[in-house]
Length: 244
Length: 244
DNA sequence: CGGTTCCTTGACACAGGTCAATGATTGTGG
DNA sequence: CCACAATCATTGACCTGTGTCAAGGAACCG
Image 1 (spheres, chains in turn green, cyan, yellow, purple):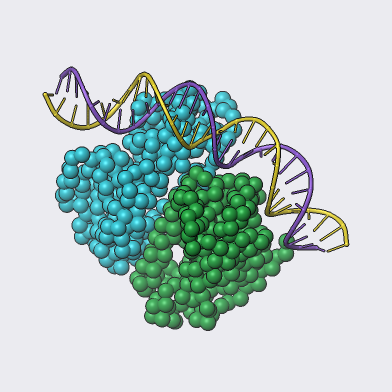
Image 2 (cartoon, protein in one colour; image 1 turned 90 degrees about the horizontal axis):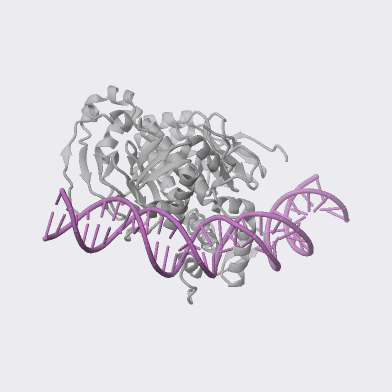
């Protein structure tokens, strides 16, 4: 595995994802302040740890492309996956105010991200309560999303779980302005299994079953949702009616 | 079911749980400010909704005694339980900045709590960045705890799940200065089942099994951890060695 | 192009869901 | 304060769904 970190200081105001990091109004009110955040951009290869349990917490991350899985333990994989972070999403919010990471973050495919130091960010919060409120809102929404996924996983039905997982990914992609019906799942079947609390075999079988029923199309890591409404029916536990 | 709300304005500085709401240093630095928070105290009976999905978010809650379950849906129970809130813990943090509740909170036993308006609290945050940082830290820790529980539930073994659940409750009780080895589980078996993603029968069977092995003692809703170390072994998946 | 890793599919066993009946506990009204 | 009723907890028998083990095939990387 190549060590291909390649840091460079970034100008947020030229960043297309700017509004995804923080809502526009905060930024326009604080152009000079945002520039002081000293954000660094980096690209890493599959399998790279963005942070490990025990590392000192110094930064907050925003994904630009790729996918990062959050894991509970430092041991070599096959561990429960706590979350998948998608492009445009913020990573590491749960460690605000903590000394050391209690979790790890691993790129599951080639990933580029921005890294902003907490220190300068906290300073910005102190100067502008508005930014602090944005942070609080961001954390609250993340917590709600986390609990929603929580509920998803306890749907004691591998097929429902996978259907819910795909719909969740789709929704999050759409929220970032990407195609919600055709996307690439960068993570392995094993990662998905460790996320849903299943085995990779079962995940595989469920993919096949959904494909056989004509609800999705799977080509390696590319997934296409052919009948999202029917998929939602599967998730809800109803039989597949003639949904669009 | 009796409607036994009984509001009264509370003086936090005489509250024994004060330090549990917010760390001492914040309070001592802001005595006058805390008094302006206009906190109300209330007692409710089993089954009372503290808030329902769709209700406007106005307040933040702190439990003084009892237990509240957070649920995803407004329908009458038998729904996934997202979290149990124990005495001394803060409820509703995930709704910071939101308009309406997306979840509901139901007392699973006779419960008393404090209710503080977000409005006055946010004002306090704006005046004192230190309080804002406390809030952020509180939310971050809550998110981490939530993800830890997340991992717990995916232990695909009903016995391990229940062992982990009991240890988790025990740890949280101890963190609040209560007995960690002997406590009352106010919620029903069904609630526990809905929380762990099991059925009430399985939960019941696991309680019996742990009791049969001499690890716990169960008397209705009272639970006593006889061999916590052995319980931790069950949770970890190891066989029960001669742990204390 | 070859080797490794990952994905898919099959056969089988077992944990836990489902259905059902009995026993304990809680709360209510006389 | 006690008795009754309703809810909740426990236990058993049976069956489905998913984990486990194993083998073959596809995709990815050097």
